[in-house]
Length: 465
Image (cartoon, rainbow, N blue to C red; front, side, top):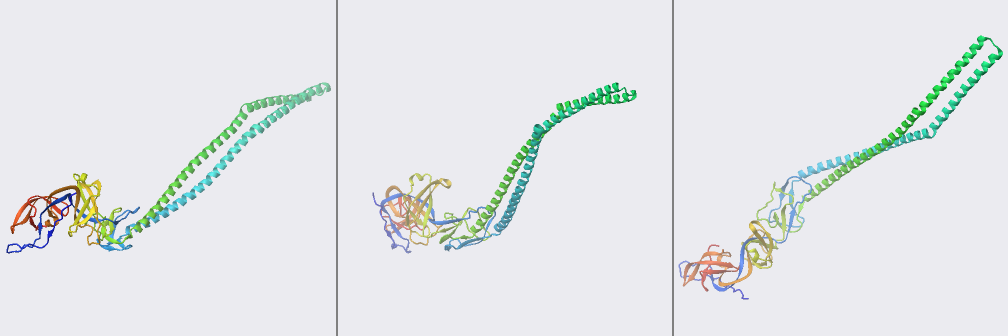
């Protein structure tokens, strides 16, 4: 591979055959080989920086700055970087503590009320079970004992009345015999027999009525009594079942209410804890020593300036603490160039502040940015320097392609020149001559002159830098 020809810079001004001495430097055009490259504007950004943002969890309100360290300040680890107005979050904290106390009392009340309701329901259920037990015992007593007792009593009563009726019949027969044999007075006989016959008829009638009453009781009254007892058992059973089911629903409702109250209580506790953490986060201190930048490390210069009364958004990187000795150049290439640009290509970075040539290798992020541009980073290996993040620079990317031709040092154009037509001053035979040239590619050190110059032409430094 042909080596790139080094250009010797003639630092001493030539003596000119003119009245006024031109102090501009003179550069010699030489034929050589140049690597094709892309020249793109860029800027220096931190290669290593700690970003600071407020990732608040619960605070809702403006974050207003009371005081902030100046952009570009050197800060030490643990140093306070910014102070915020905390009155709003402190009001929210007081309200959160009040809400938490209310939620705790609400949960305690519902818990006690649930316990009381549980006791009352247990008493009602026990009473309903006792009522059902009594109804069952009453039915069982009726079926096993009372019904048999009633039947025995009816049988004994009927026997008693039947015996009485039979006794009266026997007495009447005896009276009739007695009055016939003794030949008593007719009046007395009539009275006694009449009364005996009347008592017998009444007894017969009473017995017939009692038979009807017993038949009615057997056919209607006792079945109805049994039916009432069975209905009472069914009603008490259904009542107990309804009571138990309604109590189960009530318990579920109370449990759900307690869970809601517990959830609300935990939510209030979490809200208070998050607000307290948010308040602690407002004490913004440097996690490392370094150069303080307002905004994100790669923000455009001046994109953010913290000042008293200014606002900061949550989750926004509003401060960065950068290592001033570690920088990288941030640039971009177009969609037309991205296929020829890959990570690892050599690059040269020329800061605008001074014409230092800082070597590096590019890192390409294949993510299109604005206007279909692709980001290119060039990490720099540099000793301690006064270069700072935000400074403008030119990034030259060395492509694999090479070209031969007439070359001029980039310094001849003040460190930067655009491709295309340009005018330079050439010294020929002791005279200055303005010549139009066509500028081609540059490798960051030299520029290919496609037309207008010959080898060994002496060119004066361009006045427009």
